[in-house]
Image 1 (tube, rainbow, N blue to C red):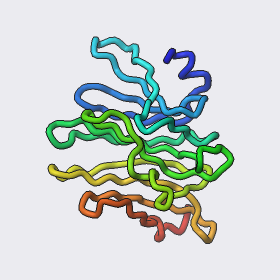
Image 2 (cartoon, helix red, strand yellow):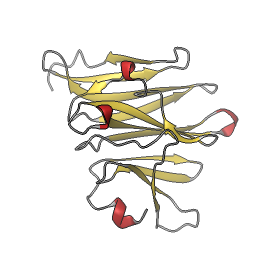
Image 3 (cartoon, rainbow, N blue to C red):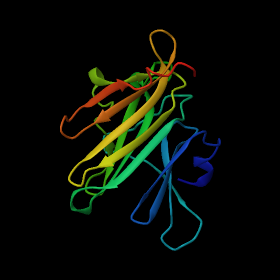
Image 4 (tube, helix red, strand yellow):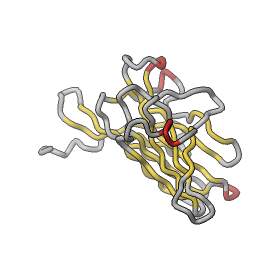
Length: 184
């Protein structure tokens, strides 16, 4: 991928992670594709532009959505783990509603769709202008992941929902965490 392909339009949101001295800066390009800049090993400032190519097939980010969140950690056997969260379009159609989709990288298996958002019956749909962020808690032998999304509740008030994956539960559990906020 050339830099002119990656940067036809300025990315509206970027997310970065560091893994073993390498920096990865993720963004959604103007073709609704998930891309990243990878830091060079030779101590220059010219990061290498790359397209995330999932072995599960193409992932198109919802049109108009450039929100992105990323986390990384070192897993079992010093395996590199990266998770990226974007808003994908239902059935790949831009006009459809969007849901949170996880894209996973493991040094043992490469890029693939993650379990969050993969199964249609368990998708977490979000508002058009949702903002995303993510965090991890590494327990040493396991890692819990949290993805936070802004949106509106049934009453039309703003809310923040935490989607948590704990390896003891092995599924994503959503919880609204902003019920006590009265003045947005």
